[in-house]
Image (cartoon, rainbow, N blue to C red; front, side, top):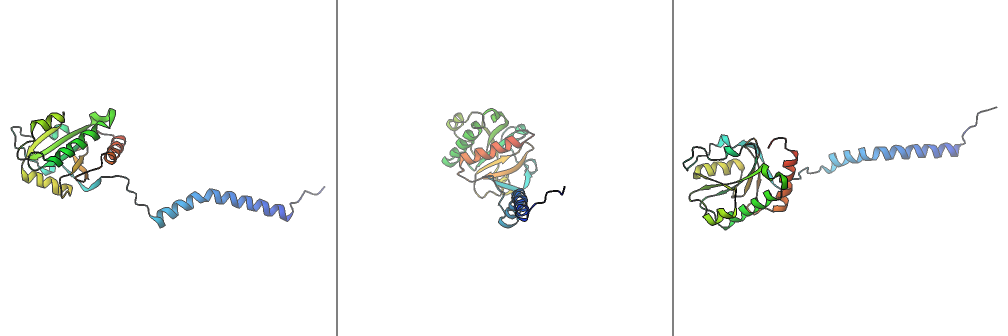
Length: 197
C-alpha cells in the first residue's frame, strides 16, 4: 500500500506555519539588536550626575578647623554619606538642602541606618536652631581651601548635595535644588545594589 503524500496546498500551509514560528522566535532578538545598534538607548537611569573619575575623600586631605584632628568624615566610613557644603553658617538654600537630605534618608526606611548626613562648613557653624531640626547631622568645620578642593573634585560649580560611597569615594552629585523623589530613587537603587555599607 503506498504511503500517503501531502498535496501542495498542505505543504504550503506547513511551511507558512514553520516560518511564522521562526519569525515569532527571532523577533525579540532582531528587535533587541535594532534597539541597541540603531536607536542606541541612553542607558542612564539615575537622576544624579556620576562623578568621573571617582575621587577618594581621603585623597583630598580635608583640614579640620576644630579641636579634633580628624574632620569627622572618617568615622562615617562604611556608610553611604550625603554631604552638602556651606561657605559660612547655613543660609536658607543650605537649610533647604539639609531638609532634603533628612527627608531622603528617612524615606529609605529600614536602610536609614546605612545612610549618614554631613554638612561641611567653612567659617561659622550653623545656628543652634538649625541643628536641633537635624538630629544626627554631622557638622564638620573645615577651611575654605579644603571646601574648594572638594567642590573641584566633585565638579560642582554650586553647593549641591554629594553622595559618598561606603569606601569613601565621591560618586554622585545633585543640583543646588534637587528633586527629593528622584534622589530617593537613586539612593534606593544604590542601597539595593550595594554589598558594602
